[in-house]
Image (cartoon, rainbow, N blue to C red; front, top):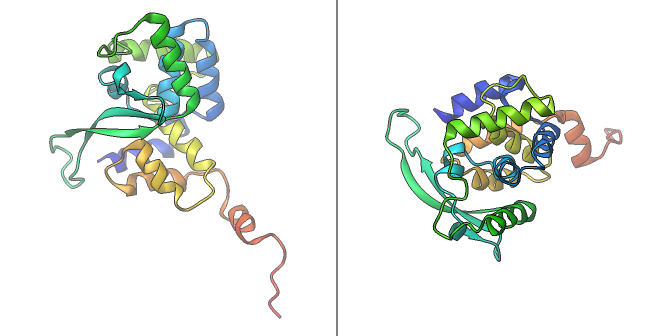
Length: 208
């Protein structure tokens, strides 16, 4: 089950990139337009590797509404790990910066509307990420490509300011079950005491 795999990875710090690590890896690819666009997409959409290389086409990008229509493989019955996955298309919000990078790359390369933006194999993506991770000095990660997805989710959780943000992250990650999304909020760096101070103030309570 995805929830179990997510929990196991997050217990090990090597399971996710930090925000600064993601930025360092992306910056290492700044002189290669394709790799820069690929890494930016992986880091700041939260998408899985197969969704990026086997789904994304220019026609799927709705820049006006800041959406990308992704083909997502979803497993609807969490009790059965071996249940075949169902492919669905979901419109998922995307950051302006990611849109800008993608559109710049698509325009520069003249990629047709119905062609894949990144027509490369998952293995090739792994090689690319490993290369720039090494250049950036980030060399101790497990599942180095999927660590972008975890890093994106953790960065979002750490910046959240409302209990409703869990619903937003659930939408962004396209998790079929909210329980999976909730684990990212359990691993926030901010301690419970500090969160209470932010919510209610740090002054001593009047208990007289």
